[in-house]
Length: 363
Image: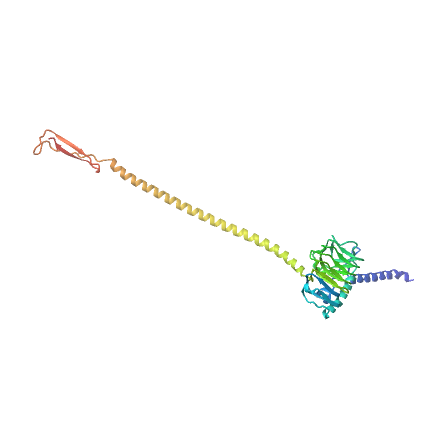
């Protein structure tokens, strides 16, 4: 009789256990569930000792024309490398030594990890013209690229892109993989179930891990690695650079904060205070005092004194002459003259302020 009472409880308990188990599976698989849609949380593929290699093969390396390689190279079990005379290698040619052999083992592990990342976003047509964000992308058969593929990290320098091609990977001539918003070649991985062919003058990005062989046609360049598990790697006048992850996150934060604060505070304070004080005080005092004193004193004294003294003294004495003094002389001659009458002669010398006269008798 108690079974009906506890049956619903037991049923709910079983559902809870299943829900927890499902959550654990999702977490273990690295999946994010949002709104019922599952998105792959791509994880960087661990390359181990194969990370230092820019070219690694299983059946030898062949080169034609001047090729520049930045990173180590090697091949095992077939250590044959031809065309080294026109290769410029910045790294070590390990041929088939122990370092190459260990790298080949790590390549097998990396290949399997990349192939196992899931669940992926299906790719059913050419990658050219697409813009993709971080994640896992899968094609059950071949994967092609004609034109430009843009990988957008959306500001996350750790964004990982994993491409899984069931058979081949082929790029057309002059195609390109473009990285934007912090995307880095070190976090782009191409797992190819057969062989990969990089077209003439293609600009490629990312690490190719092919089960069989890899061919780079004339003039193709790559920031990445060409790693062939069982087959050979064929080069022809190429430039390959082993990618390294840069510390982009620290660079962006420091740049924005320092720029805004320093610019606004320093500019406003210094400009306003210094300009107003210096200009007003110096201008008013110097102008008023010097102008009034010098102008009034010098003008009045010099003009009045010189004009009055010279004009009055010279004018008054000549204008009021003293009357002439007349001296009467008794008539008659003195010795020879007669006394018929006196004659008076007045003479006024031009150079004297006084007058004199002379009385002479008539002959």
